[in-house]
Structures are given as structure tokens and as C-alpha cells.
Length: 352
Image 1 (tube, rainbow, N blue to C red):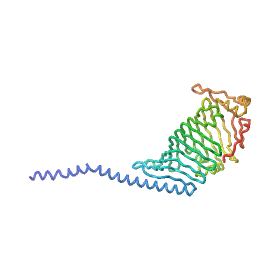
Image 2: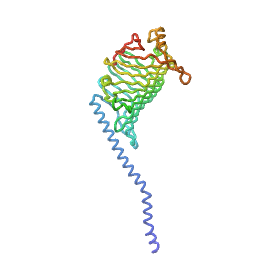
Image 3: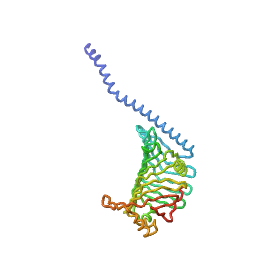
């Protein structure tokens, strides 16, 4: 009897110790879950408060945003903000769109991904329109020093607008665009890099000018200076601020491929004191003989310009005809010059 009691006395602490380590991981997991839940709710409440403060600041600036049936969720690893629909009103400008979902991972709060359902309806003085798509996604990356990159992707976008009695329609297979501060020019010039690609683009109003109904693939690579300071003003005010600051667009490449016709444009554009587009661009093209006839008023003018195409055509990979250098296009005081010749009957109107 004494030996048994001694054995029990010896083994009881070991049994209690083994049970403690058996349950300890579950207790620790429960504590961590409670702490994580509390932290997520703090982040969630700060997000909601930040949205309220931003909406109040926007309304004070004259921009009234509406987020119908706003919800903030995403537990446990991300924060999601949803709106059944979104709208913006500023003066006579009104924009309305469908459901908005914006989310960020808790461990990457400076990377926001958003999805917007269409259609987007726009109405203003002299402007009525609608934009549609099957998918619209945007990505925003920021850092302590400010914006790093904005990216946009749209699948099957289409536009239908009426501006001052003129109907404008366009559609495409896809659209991709990116914007970021230019690493070397943002400090002194407030410059932004812009890159965009639109595939399968159709603009029926331009088909007679460009000579065919084929869809076009469009590529843009440019640097826009004096982009810093954009504050959501009405577009005419933003353009005037940009013009007065000496803003310009440096076109590294604007490329258009439409059936057998190809065009590449490089140069510099700005706004003059008359609020018209001004600058100079260099163009290389293939298959645009019909366009030259349109610009010069007939085959005689086309042959004259053809004599100016001194550089020979270069063969491109794949056996396609290469591009020939066209005379430079200069935009000056609303007039358009093709080489030394002014294009007859063409005058550029002020943008605003």
C-alpha cells in the first residue's frame, strides 16, 4: 500500500504537465485569434473613419460623392469597402456607376485593388454619354512619399457620347493603362510616365479618314510634365492650370496599326495662349496614301508629298512593308503644316 501511494505521488505531476502542453497550443491559438480580431476591428473602424473624413473634405471642395449601402468587411485578412452604387456630382457634372469593390490586404495596406461595375453615365452642359465594359479593374500603389503607380484594365470597353450635338462612339477588345511619377523628372518638373495599349479599337467616325473599317491597335508611351498639383478641379480649370505651369506632353511613341496601315508618331505637344493644341510631331507611316490625298486635296498633292519622302522604306520583321518618314507636322496658332505646306481648310479650335 505504501509503495502504490509513493508511485502515485511521483507520476501525478508528470500527468498534469503533459496535459498542460496538450492544451497550451489551443489556448495560445485562441488568444492570438482574439488579438487579431481586435486588431482587425481597429483597422476596420479607422478605415471607415478615414472614408468619412475624405468624403467630408471632398464635399467641402465642391465634389459630392455618394456610396449607396456602404459596407466595410473582409475579415480576417483584408479590408473591403463596398458600395451598391457610386455617384459624383460637381456643379452641372454628374457621374453614376454601379457596384464598387475596393480592397487591401491587411499586410499590404498601401496596395488597393478596385472593381467597378458599369455602366458609367455622364451628364453635363452639352455632354451626355455612357461607358460600358465587361470587367473594369484598377490598382493603386502608394508609399510614404506619395503615389507610386496607378494601373487600369478594361475588358470590352465601349463609349457612346453626344457632345455639343456631335455623336462620338468607340469600342475595343481591351484597354490597359499605367501611370507613375517619372523617376528622373518628377522632382523638377512634376512629370508622370503614361503608358497605354488599346487593342481591337473601333472608331467608326475615323474609318473614312483612315481608309478602312478594320479595328486598330493603339500604343501610347509618353511623359506629361507639370502633372503634379492636380486637385480634382473641373477639366477646363485643370487644363488652364497645366498650361500656365508650362505643361507639355513628350510623345515617345504613339503607334496605330489598322489593317495594312501603320503609323508611328513622336514629338512634343502643349497648349498655346489660345487654348489650342500646339507643337511638332514626326510621323512614320505605311499604307496612308489615301490619307495624304485627303489632306492635300487630291492625287497631285499626294504625289508632291511623295517626292518629299526621301528616306527609303525599311522592311520590317515578318515581311511587312516598312515605315517611311513623312514630313513633320507642326501645329501653330491653330494652323496645321505638313512639312512646309499648310493643310487647307483645317483650323484647330480651342479645347475649352
